[in-house]
Image (cartoon, rainbow, N blue to C red; front, side, top):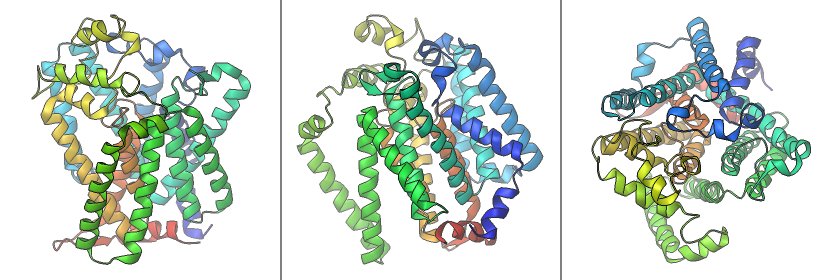
Length: 434
């Protein structure tokens, strides 16, 4: 490890590094079954604060993040305004409180989203790209070994429907986190970090856990990200024109979509899924019908899946009136549409497009494709889970953190050329060295 990397780690107080590991581990929900019951964790509506742990843990994380940010960080208006779409999206979501049918739930949900975003801003300001990736490497190593230990410690209780879940409450949560861990370890090994062979071993364990979780969404998203990475490498090697890369990428994507639609039944069979995607198509259909009643503004952030509220129609039709079986739309884009309407969805998609543009520029300038791969995985996984603008979500926290890191590292001049700041160049080039 070179001296530049050592100085980056040494500049952070031990207490702050301990906080970072604990906050990220808790946000992943990797050990949530040791802290609360599944009913408390997956509660919706008025019951979202039913767990005493929830009432303490997340507010404490918000406060500590704000404290470390105020004492050591340099969060200013310029940093916030550098990602204007994020600020606009949060403001609009906050305004949705006023047309929510469950104002109390929406207020709590908005506060949780803003708090989670604040934690993401903290990591974006206090950590630089390469060192944040190494921090995630340590965190996901803890998660992976914790999941393996859970199978030993609690035996079959670590299984859900015959698939691995560990201390997670859901196997899909394990699948998503193991997939992110795989990306983290693969990038650390690619960057030839010290002990790169151990990162490869952890990547193998992560891949195994993704398969053992049986999470079709995570497996498919990870497969597509891998294909995208190979395609990106081929383009970099054999084409130099940006226009050629764009045209070829669009052509390949259209061909892939055509093949996917044509062989959809075969794809589902390969992943062991029914044509209704384990009941999700019914949920999506019912949710879309409900979205048509309030298409422009939605039902208010967090105000849809409330007992006795708008979602009661779906619960009565699909879940027999039991909200414990269904607490979200199982599609992040559809969830945002329900909560904030077409306006909120449009703002989110604009923010995602902005993030991809920054990630591409960042990869071109630094040869670091980690943010681009993570953003791609997040966009794909959001088709079956909720990752964007989610309260107390690790994915949203990481999205905000990496977006701020990239924006701070990249400077775009008036001609549109991307330049890396002097400080960013010294740090970001470290990820491609050794």
